[in-house]
Image (cartoon, rainbow, N blue to C red; front, side, top):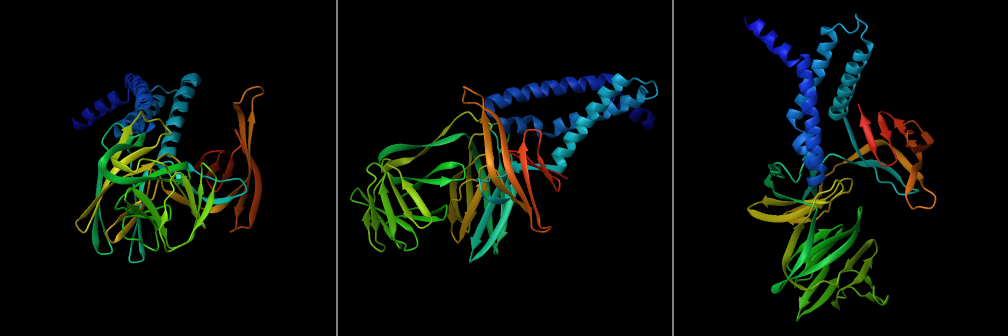
Length: 416
């Protein structure tokens, strides 16, 4: 009795009418995902539709029903080649997409011309942490998918160096922008501009902060730190103090000066400060502000996203915002108690067992207009394990394949 009931259920699940229903549901899901992507961004469409279990189950049932119907209607024996080709093609596409999803990954490899790289940044989103304590570094990462829709909660605890660290995501902010809010009774806040992988990056340092921004420690307060770039606010004036020599150039007049170490100098806004490999620009914002307001806008596929996070160590809580976008490393920027945290939003760095050198990137344009017609990359594949040095040109429909990796002009994919 139970066997007959099970057979009846399976027959209905994988019948011809069921296959048609699965196809209709698939089309509806794709249509809904298109509207979601247009209004809320690619990540929202992935979270609500493409990367859900119900969508995976729908495709699995659709694939099985196609295979069952191939045998049920004896398509091979009866030589129904047209129908068989359609069914077989759909099965191959579904299986191929499953292999790509569960056994492959993709990412972005950033290489400047005449430079060599053996690493790439993942296309999948991660929260990557580096916690440093007493000279020892602890590294851990968590796969996440934050979006304008869906549940964005994340809360985990870790034991680092015998001490518990609690990490919690409080909120996700799509395509945010930071705006100063004037308040004469507020605390002084300086905007620092530095160059990052994605170009210009802006950071806000308020009075009382001691933060590490891309290798430069900013100390905004009354007590100087010889190892930091110190900023002091006194009698409505800004001063700077550093333990090393800094060169300063005023952008408006191009006037240059050298600041001797170990003493205070007037801080010049809208000026470039540099010392060795350190280079920073202090913007001409209002010196008094009540806070930083986050403006949320529509999330596009290449937009920046941000999450509000809380880290608790030894009873001390710190709430801060971190930013990131696809293919670009986020901003390292946090210290809590005995720990210094360096974290990146959205992506994780992977190492390759070989290297790629970009010799030249070629972009051809249509005549009389400024639109690109084609892209090409002249690269050299370098594998020191086998002493391989191989030149190749990468362009449309001509990719570089090596050890299961596939290199396109702007994208790297891996298939196991």
